[in-house]
Length: 121
Image (cartoon, rainbow, N blue to C red; front, top):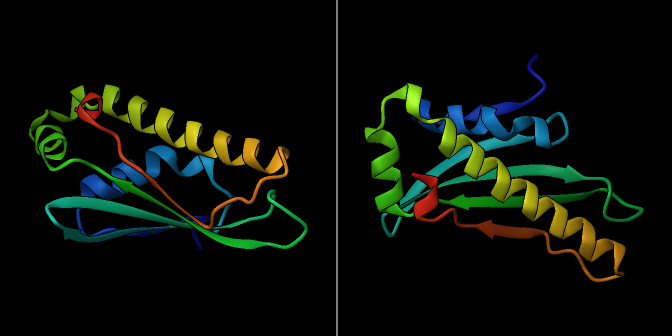
């Protein structure tokens, strides 16, 4: 059995999920959601163990602006490295922010949305 679960209809979404999967614990699910209001999204479901005494199911949604997604899909595969780096930076920053909130004694949200903008592609 694979350590991570990918439920992505488009290979581009699975590729993005694999780029960031090592930032999450094993058994994390990466789910491509139906496009809503023109925005393609990737939902990341994981059990967060580091934000308290009890395990918490947490969802991070990556919502990519439709224009940026169109540019990304039009790019040759060999040129997508920058987009991967931007996505990783957004996810790492969001996870770091959650850890900081927890360290400061603040409530850590169970649902987070990040929106990589034009710098994504």
